[in-house]
Figure 1 (cartoon, rainbow, N blue to C red):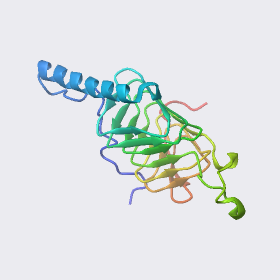
Figure 2 (figure 1 turned 45 degrees about the horizontal axis):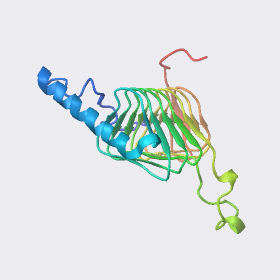
Figure 3 (figure 1 turned 135 degrees about the horizontal axis):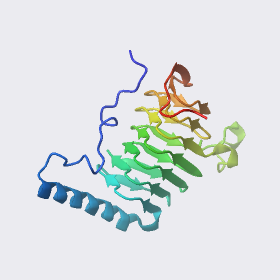
Figure 4 (figure 1 turned 30 degrees about the vertical axis):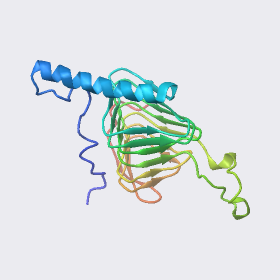
Length: 207
């Protein structure tokens, strides 16, 4: 069985220039106008909590809760009911696909450019204190830490990325894996806790 996550939707190009690409010119323009109208509706609904780059496509629903601020870079595609909450900030780089994921940010979550983020779970908080004596008290500062996902990373279906994690550029987090800590650039990680099982050729030379 392959270690790579299998998510054909996440691997399918859905940017504005592909959608309606085989339609006649007038129909293609109508589709694109419809997509822009959908995005404008979300902008009207969420106001300053949704910061948009150019040519963002939103299909399948987007929910922003608990005062969270979401920044979507140029050409970002949102599909299959994306939910963001936690009250912090989420920054998504250009040409990234968010495909049915949940991102919880009590501090900050950064997703790089050209990433594939499947229907996974990304949270910068434990929500409860680890110490048994403090577990029912309000969560302290040790329960949360920012997350960074570098450019061209692929997060597979049902994976978990936990507080304080950093996913290296070009790396793959396999389906149902659990990451807490640092994933090196250009590797595949599998399991709970996630372990490196394969080296990949990086998209550009590493520093």
